[in-house]
Length: 118
Ligand code: HEC
Image (cartoon, rainbow, N blue to C red; front, side, top):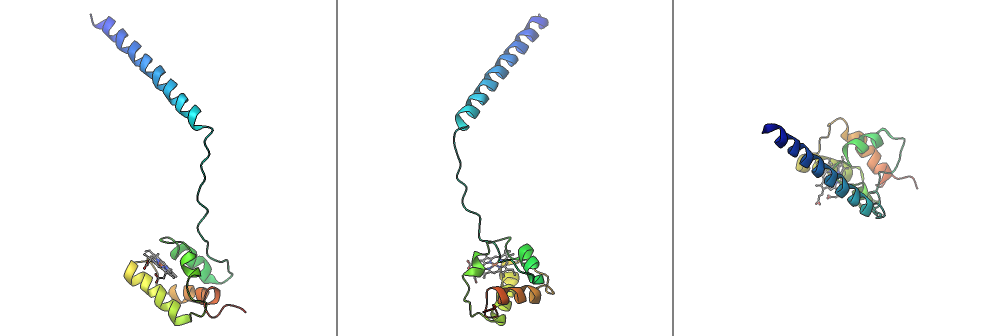
């Protein structure tokens, strides 16, 4: 009596599959007209030809957006940005290469600090 049981199981599996597919397509059908409004993109770093721009892109916006740079005082001088970068490394464990810090600081002070072109 194993053969009929196997047939029954296959039939019920097939039935469950049909039900599952019908449910799935019903879900897709109800979900289709919905629109999802994504939040606006985070603030990007200001573009620059300075070499620190690319470094900052890879090392300064992994944890937070570039909005943090925008909210720093525009009269912030080089030592301020240097301290900021070092604080990111020491306090928050930002994976910064020491050789890259002055290059990144040069970009930051000329883009967001007191060495911005007037
Ligand atoms: C490992 C994660 C991480 C990386 C990488 C990182 N930061 Fe931050 N940064 C933080 C955190 C966390 C805060 C928030 C501190 C707070 O809210 O007080 C922060 C805050 C800031 C602020 C806001 C001012 C302040 O003192 O809180 C600035 C500006 C900033 N980061 C600049 C940078 C720069 C420049 C780099 C690249 C050199 C960088 N961050 C890379 C984690 C990171």
